[in-house]
Image (cartoon, rainbow, N blue to C red):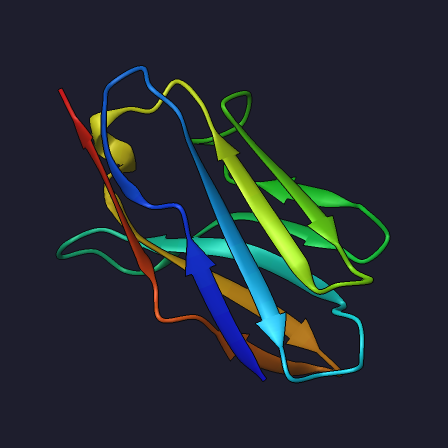
Length: 114
């Protein structure tokens, strides 16, 4: 199974970005897909997850600003990020739990300038 992310980039504070992630190589649907991020010098942290049934979970720091959505039939997940802040700057990693096995993407850089 391979996870391919897209949509990162450079944006000014207050702007928006949309991240996409596609999991290929499995005929099984994901149990959970989500996004994690790792800022320079910090540990990787959860941003948001969505289950195959549509249940979502968000880090407190992004609630009200980020929206995660998933398409379990096609193993796709999206992260709409609005009102971005400089502290959102990080490498964002896509994660998928398929058949109780964790898969990770290579990461996409999101940089928010002040």
